[in-house]
Length: 113
Length: 110
Image (tube, rainbow over all chains, first blue to last red; front, side, top):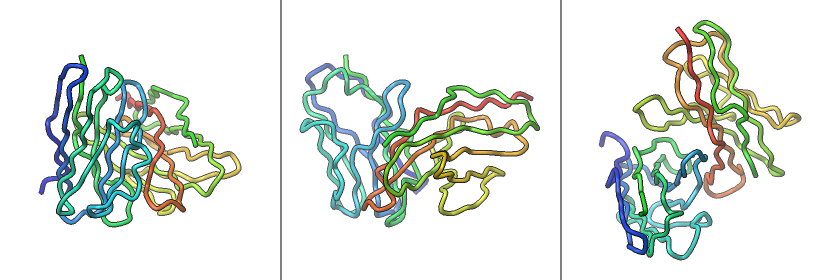
């Protein structure tokens, strides 16, 4: 494909609602990362997938956050019972096996009202 | 672990040398990276210290004594204007759980 694709590009929702963010990595990239960036801050690691497994989910901030990946391709990040502090840009990145995040998507800008 | 980029904004004239500062604190064996985001483009990996390569004229040397990984270019070009992020990873970890700095916006004045 043309690169890492994320959807939606923008999401505005009310506090307490659940949201689902999607990432389509570059075909053949087995490593997939989720990061988030709050306003004026650096990127924060959330979770790493190698294939469909998540050997490192240490960055998920609470049990309201979960993620899965299927077919060694698409990944979804789900945030339940959203809070205002969840407002951020959520970025997905992919890379060849074992490599650092190399290609990022445009991100999903999430705003919690 | 922490990554500090002391300058939020750095302005230099075209043709002048540029140095984007990055300092880190980490007790293990770090691997350092520079990422760049040009206007209206996606974040992308610029270089990593273990490669010891020059990308777009930029180089960065890991100085373990000073815990720094400054990004340098001898002659800045207008197309270098972008947001630059320094990042650190534990080279012994199973994943590249990068810790990013807050970024420095480089503006090259024509």
